[in-house]
Length: 293
Image (cartoon, rainbow, N blue to C red):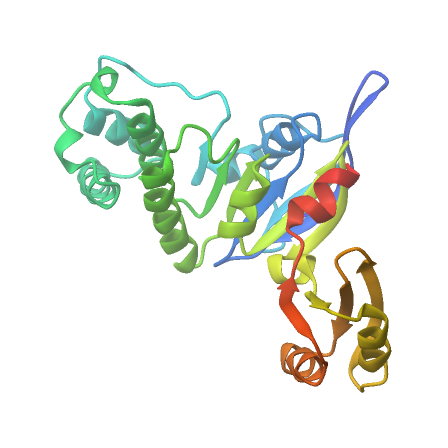
């Protein structure tokens, strides 16, 4: 696991990071989500040792890291770059070799990754001949080619079309499942909710929420539309396991309520007269947190 403890970063009068603490667990994908001014890139650079925090520490398995200890971190910055005239496979092998692995291992890994990313037929083409989405896949392949112990990707979903996103996240999931922390910094709330296990909500350099996606989403609430909302509300409130029943929309006779579980909610609604519609409602992460930033 990778642990950040009370990371603070300042420049002049501006505070970029303010006592940021969280743990990215091995085997899980952790998304750092926030606006472009939240401090995401600064936090990623601190994790990678590219800038030094004024306070706090970055630890891998309880061992505080120096710059050289990140030799086998896989890092993809927000500012993408490549060698347009170099063949795709040569570029991946070259970048993997910078991490110290052998030529043979780098070549094997490159071929395997290109196959998983549906780029096997593009490996010997110059990078400039690929589409933008294909280049984004190559960037991911290069990030993983040295079998990194930690993966850190800034602006994680940039340049990925729907097909590329599916392929890339399948690959990152497999890499995480091998026992590696995978950290994705992004302002794409929907993708973070869909693909991450844990989410860190960052706002103006501070962690405003953190935890598993399920925990942050919270329990669902329920809505039922009836012919007589007032009578239905009273009937709901009288039942065990139902709480916070209120008429959300009098014009449409809609009642919003909480229940101990879905079975309890369904049973309570089944006992009502004149039910027109019933649904479970669970606000997205963006709806719960983005609007408050």
